[in-house]
Structure formats: C-alpha cells, structure tokens
Length: 127
Image 1 (cartoon, rainbow, N blue to C red):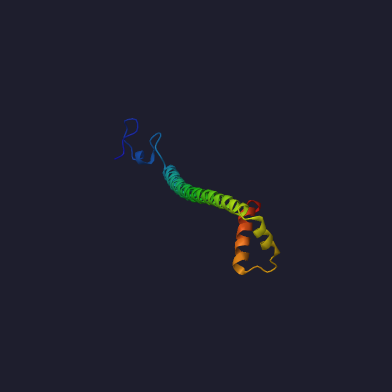
Image 2 (cartoon, helix red, strand yellow):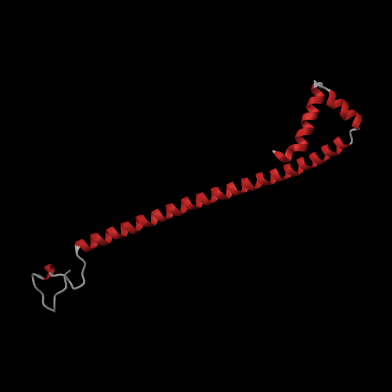
C-alpha cells in the first residue's frame, strides 16, 4: 500500500520516498552498526570473563602464599625453640667434657652428627 502524496494519487507515488524514510543504504548501515555493537558487547563479556578468571587465579595464589608464609613462621618459631634448647644443653656440658670432645681428631660418626646438628642449630641465624 502506497499512500497518496498530498492527497493526490499518481502512478509515480511508489517511486517517491516519504520524508524521513530510510533507504536501503541506511538500513544496511544501521544493521552493520547493530552487528558492531553486538560484537563489541560480546568482546566486553569475554574481557570481563578473562578478568574474573585472572582475579580468581590471583586470589588463589594469595591464599597459597599466605598459607605458606604461616607455615614458615611456625617453622621459624619451632627452630627458634630448638636453638634455645641446644644453647641450654651446650651450656650444661661440663668444661672437662668439652675439652675432651675438642681433643678428638676423628670423633665417632654419632658424635660428629650431634656436633654438626648442634652447630647448625646454634648458627642458624646466619643462614
């Protein structure tokens, strides 16, 4: 149905466009813009999903590092108590026995291991 122009019906009426009517190029352009907007929206959703995945990954890393830090702090406290115990034990060795231990050029393996462990415990703050 083609409405008449200015109240006059004419055979040319279908060829005359209404004022403000969209042409085929306008429709194609608008359709292209809609597609571009849809593509941009899809890209924005993908970027947001990637961002959320990265945030989640970093949160998990933070939890892991925090847990490991807690374990290291507990281990530090444990070794600190061992160091204190070793220092007390060494102070409790009579002088005569210390002189005897120092004179051993090749102490037995068990004595050597105990001396090494004690040395490491007492000097652990240097490592």
